[in-house]
Image (cartoon, rainbow, N blue to C red; front, side):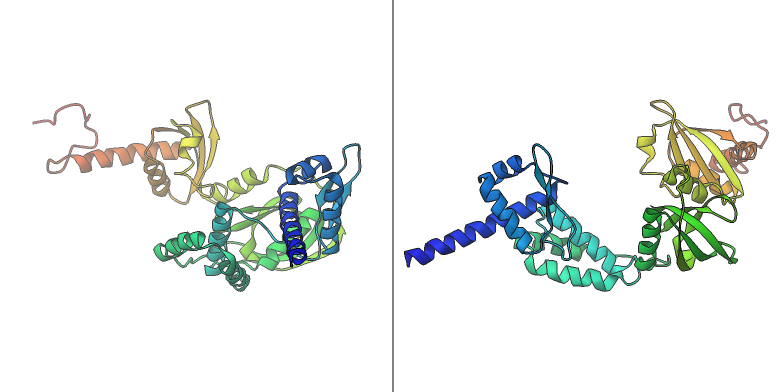
Length: 343
């Protein structure tokens, strides 16, 4: 009986050590063998045996050459068990629940399946936290079109492999065209995805809304990557400034970090100018909309251009002063607000 108990203890100890070893291999790209053995409190010989046991279980643990040597966990046919801390587990579950509710076409079913598996193994303390969050939150239905994740996967793979893509694209006016592109980067703009690519026929960089792309086809031809602009800046300018009739540059009397919560990446481009100033680039189809956006920031600003916006703000300020005057009719438009009204 004692012999059987000793065997069971050995098996349990070895199994627990293998799980710790697998968890450590997942935390870093590579581990020196000596450091890994020290973390597990085993000899190098025992470490080599444990590495072989993982390989026998089809986990691709690669040996690294060199004086120090080491190990790296590669990609295999199956996903190894992941060990998450409390905050990581909560973050994963919340992300899956968001995806299950909306976002990407075809992703809800996979998200629900993953959630079911997680709910079965989550500790009670985490289930209580997540239950409270689920009970207290409601998701609004988004009017934005959803995106097939297979489309994102195809475009991402083409970006990585430098493969040309032929696709159909419908612009904001409803005109459909066929494009041949060299995809460079996918950019997430909150509830929308954009593709920055070089348009071969137009010989220039372009921004494509992914939900307007249809029938993409990898042509098989590879291209040599060109010198490209910064993807985030390029796409940001394309969606916040370029499409609009009026485009403005405004010097905001506040640091960019203080404005990040008030100006989203899809509503304006912020560039730091010194420690307490920022340059804001925005666009709008009307001067009224642009003025409202600037006033809603709640900070001082100076319009650099265009002149039409400067003049419009002057007229708007005069209207606001008249509206704030409690006297019948307010003050006259040409009256100096610092002088008393004429008798």
